Length: 191
Image (cartoon, rainbow, N blue to C red; front, side, top):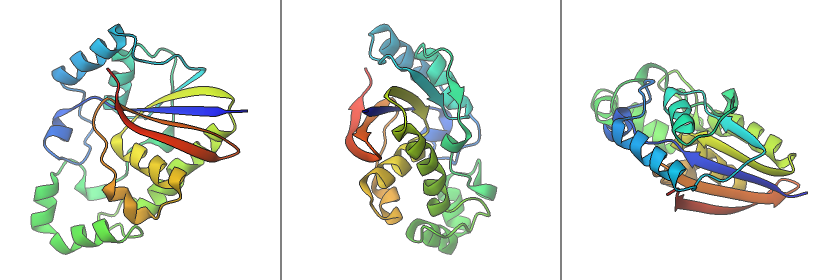
């Protein structure tokens, strides 16, 4: 049995353009156009299952891509950044430089009173483990940090590598494998 997991990173939003921690902002107009163009070009693969991160941006991206009947999956939700939600990285870095430095260097740190990178990677890995049990293709529309966590766990890399994975909007990261051993193909543009 071969499992295939196709992760599509969500389209752009104002928060993403401003380097602002997720605040529930919707996909912006250019992001919607790009997603609809990809859907019109037939770039979205067919799947037996569709999973959607429970954020407005991911739901809107999935809809624009024509992915109907998808299930919102809580384990694929955004990294909980607690009190930093809605602030830009520059704002938080100015107010709490030591906390930001600790958060970026220590995967167990959660100075924002949210979720640590390690806890987040553990949560996402639960869904990755579930995907390994499905035969066929699963397409998931997710936030970039979910792709980072999947890449870290699929490769068996330390969580410190989380911040070294760059994920662009509307790109595809594909995993295929058997018995939880994944092969990875990362960063291909959707369109």
